[in-house]
Figure 1: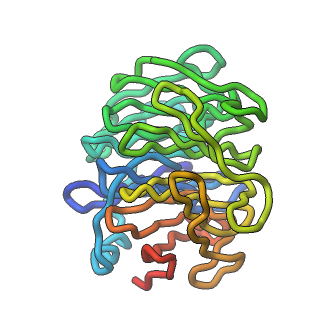
Figure 2: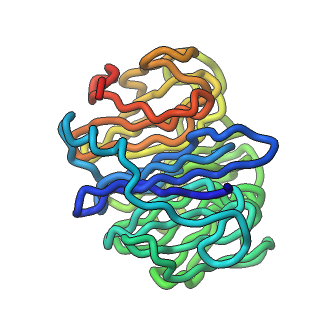
Length: 306
């Protein structure tokens, strides 16, 4: 039942979910993604997404998300099958993009879930992956992928052709230690969750290092194993601060604006939150991994009852 049931908000207001099951793991909601080009994309997988999308839903519209509209995939290695799908994103045409992590590839589907194409294979060369974790699609349709065990980011054109890679293993600027979530903004800047370095790094679209923020800790502005990231249309950066069991929101200069959540199973609490997304109105959607659920929050961080 290793199946991404991707939930992405399309022009027809349908959502897509993704789920991955393992015989040794529980079914945990792990990943969520957003961008200006689609409405909303959420991934549900065991260990556990990010990229750009866009929702624009008042409270009553979120009620419709409780109904499953579509399912994609099953466990396996064939096209439309998955092994540990992690990141999920939507493209400008509402297509669905999945980081099929343990198959070391990206799979692309149309808005109805029909398989279109795939790219990538196992390895460390150009266009190859070693357990990719995150995927996003920028405003010109390029795929940007966090190649986790190769400690780098790779960029591909709209057909999946390799364009460039940047980063390698390390702790200095521009280097990574197991990058996970990845997102882009309207100007093309790339934001990477540098998980084991407990920070967010920012790059220009060509891979030039711009800046960083965060370090290990539990105080406001500090991070412990950030997993996924989203950027709002007001340039707020939303980060799932997983091991601190909270969501942090930063401005574009990396200053902490607000924090919400604490460890627990009550409304508004988290247990190792993973995927995160933000819609056009600022509502925040979180894959609450350890509690096996999706939670939705108002722009001010208060829990949204649906």
